[in-house]
Image (tube, rainbow, N blue to C red; front, top):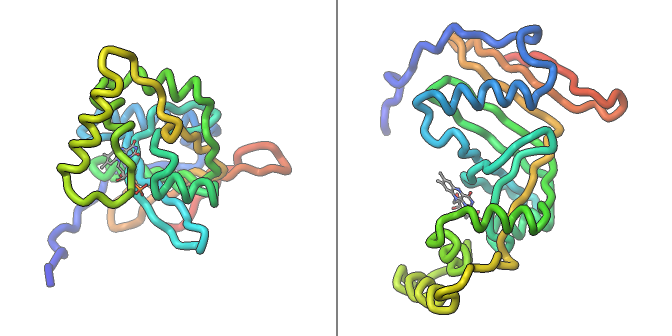
Length: 214
Ligand SMILES: Cc1cc2nc3c(=O)[nH]c(=O)nc-3n(C[C@H](O)[C@H](O)[C@H](O)COP(=O)(O)O)c2cc1C
């Protein structure tokens, strides 16, 4: 068995306090996201998205956050993929940004909904043509007999749309996560970490901020 004891690191002393954070979790997200973008963190827009199947089993995968504002966090995928099917059955999700180089993570929990096709279309057309073809060609999450089979599907899509703009596939588009809970986690020395959570209070129509024990 591998011995990972030596991986233990001394975490930063840069803390996070209930008073120091922005009252608005989206503003606090922006502060940390901008810091992650300006750091050595690889793919700071990558989030681990957890979904739940109809029989209550969780699954997760990385997707890229393509936009965010106070209405939520947007990602794009295939509606018929494993996650797409689960999202039709259960709209509750969790998304985790693992900014390990900064000793930080943000966890968002909330509900997803499909975004308007016009927004998906605008984003789809902003992607390189090869990615647009890939979206058409890949029956995401379905079994392939070989890489060759996928390459044939790509060739068929290239021929189908040769010389013309590629339309938005009806099976592909964006989702918005509307958060009801945020957790900002800052690693501190000796595992005495900071955890600040925000949860949305329906009765007060306001975000409540609390500290959790690490
Ligand atoms: C860095 C990274 C970014 C990814 N971004 C996306 C994405 O934005 N949308 C997407 O559908 N899949 C993305 N993937 C692939 C997914 O992790 C996953 O393999 C795929 O969506 C199929 O997941 P599913 O079978 O659970 O539906 C990304 C993977 C990685 C490692």
